[in-house]
Length: 259
Figure 1: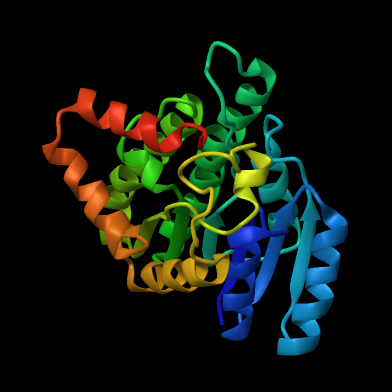
Figure 2: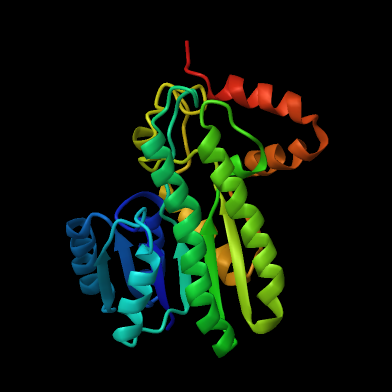
């Protein structure tokens, strides 16, 4: 069975993806900043499914963190068959008021580290003529997002990048899937300080487990863009036929704090 490397595996969708892969008998390399949580997950999954789990505690918003992880797996002769770039975070607030250092970390994690991970492991996959990569984007990728301007922009990058590189390598035995979930019950909202947003307040959101199961299946099928949920698919599709100025106004209304 294939070995999957999953970033941001200590909670939310990343943790759920780790469980999905483990249930299928696959070994894991789990990467996140909180190593103690990863160690707990390692014990749980190894005991339940009799698989091998290797954990790496790493702050992936730091420059060259992806290279350090790649070097570690290479030195230990761990072949990565599936790469799942799940780690990422957002921030809620007007751009003029938000914290630049947090936004720089966001850009580093959501864009730079994801791109570097893809670059490093993709070369090995192409050489083997096999492999799968999932980059976790968002329905935010399909429009700009007032009150979360930088986050939306990073996810637009992830979607565009994933589609382009998938086209380049599909004939080399490798597929790249951009998973685009909508708002999900995952801890993301608390981290982004957006619990009071109209987007999530009082809403019943899909669970991380549901999104992970859908995303994993889409990756295994080699789907290029996987939008979780029919209404999310409708929304993402309708954006193409709506004037951009109108889309931005609607998104602002949805994102604003509930009154």
